[in-house]
Amino acid sequence: MQKVTVQRSPFGRLADGAQVDAFTLELAGAARVRVSAYGGAVLSILVPDRDGRMGDVVLGFDTLDGYVADDSYQGALIGRSGNRIARGRFALDGHEYSLRINNGPNHLHGGPEGFHKRLWDAEEVRTAEGAGVRLRLTSPDGDQGYPGTVDATVTYLLTEQGALRVEYDAVTDAPTPVNLTQHTYWNLSADPRRDILGHRLRLDADRITPVDAELIPTGELMPVAGTPFDFAAPQSIGARVDGDDEQLRHAGGYDHNFVLRGAGGGLAMAARVHEPESGRVLEVHTTQPGIQFYSGNFLDGSIVGKQGIAYGRRTGLCLEPQGFPDAPNHPGFPSTILRPGERYSSLIVYRFAVE
Ligand code: GLA
Image (cartoon, rainbow, N blue to C red):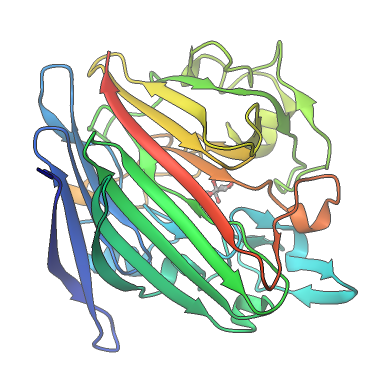
């Protein structure tokens, strides 16, 4: 008998009157996940601590308005392209394209009206593995400057084992970058008044793609051994985050793409996070070649989130499985270009445990 339940409920209305629904996916005692059709955002994830107490381990807002106004990508489903494209420019098959600029001189996370600011079509789904919500979006030719019409489908599925799967699928009618990810901010203590510096992180990566002062990759791959970026064995995030290191200075902490050892060769573990006080553990598995680890450096208390709590610096961390940032401008990076007749497919699996 299947135990995962899905409940659809109204979440709010957009300025144009459109109703936005949210879907609550629940496996009693193991996980309760709420997803919004607006932005495909993860609104909340409740999982138990080592004493069985459920707590919400993601940052976000109590109401739809919070997500509409937000520019920190809370919970967001990111597209067409995660992270930055330098100057919003790239060349493809001899054509030059200019994307909308929304981060200094650069294009970030699909642009100001990227996939995180769209109302997706949503329906409940049930499979042999679990149940959840399937979201669909058509991104028209020229959307945010990108060529071609892209049809994207993203399924959030809570499995009968209590894992959250995010399955991405996209097709296009013209060559275009497609690099979809998920931008949930995690705080496994379930108390976002506290920072994430005591969380212990393991990353299955030996290299990062180092960046310049605008956080654009230089194109090199930098070995992490002996640097503050070495998370091969679990380290607390705070131990070296303010170390004397050029890469940390550029980003004000961690905000870097790690080159995964599995590097796109099927589903592999990318990251494991352990919060020692609650005992909660998060594992992130992905089919992608990279993962952006962002230590919430830009949070500065100006965002007031759930229950009126202001999110201070480093009170949430993001682990964004992805193709490498600015890949369309780096022939040496794995390609993020999708062509007609091909199918983009990507999978993230979040597993929860206690230790
Ligand atoms: C990503 C970027 C960061 C920042 C956050 C959102 O992680 O790499 O620089 O833009 O998103 O604030």
